[in-house]
Length: 382
Image 1 (cartoon, rainbow, N blue to C red):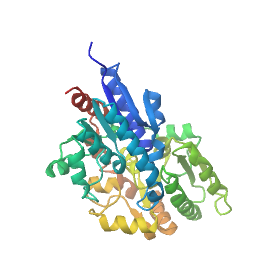
Image 2 (image 1 turned 90 degrees about the vertical axis):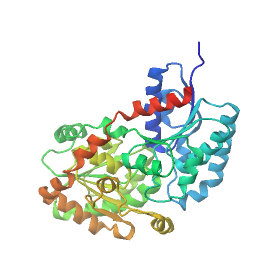
Image 3 (image 1 turned 120 degrees about the vertical axis):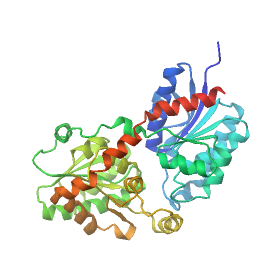
């Protein structure tokens, strides 16, 4: 009998962990004896990945913020590199986390280990110097969006568009009323969902701003209700602290652990941090306002490297400013509240915003996890 397929995995953050867990299940369906080990989050560990370290250690955001964590991250990468070079997997899969994974992939590829990277870094948008690193480290790049595969192929990288798992999971037009009933929200009052990000640094920077904007909305629509899904349990105390503070204790906010999809479905408008949540909101066909703030020095560096006119994925995918986005000093409570109130008070404006979203969902719905699993199995069995 042939040896079991051995797959090395490294995922960073919650979104990477979800992809990794789905990938493990998809590969196990075809190869029940397949073995997985690497840097894994809770979902991957539950799916049967042997954890050499926990992916929470990679969830650091911002060019400047990451500096304090660098020595530990370098040590971890050396440890993982040594492990996989001593016990080579049939294929190594880096899931997102490009700052960590691209260098690791380069070392492993040099050692003769086939490397696949799933979720392309945004080299089309900024930091194009990474293209050389990708060419030298990655045998195959699996992309979420079709334009990414085209861009990478033009720059000499072997790439395949597999679709976006979120588009496969999400069915649009799920009932707003049903979502509200599940969350215990009032069906007769307008609702705004607040999603200030999935990392502690994002939440600390954006949640006070979002709550100030919410407060301004209540001056115009007095009975508006708010729902705040918290991405991870350890962020609940941070959110509770801000909600209990004197300036926000009169807001009608329903605090949820996860349930972001339900929260967005229940909402008449969504205020969110730029990132995957904006794509999910687009796939759910909900009107939104996007905001983001980085540490000031990080923002200066990022804005110099940026090569695209928009930051949020909906705008980039559509090639037009379909969704209002407010960045850095532009992200003020007044501007965010104004944009939200426009969507709540002008249903036609909200309808116009979401009109092209369905077409994007159809384009991205490709059975992504199964397609990614197939490519990875093929690389591992060569």
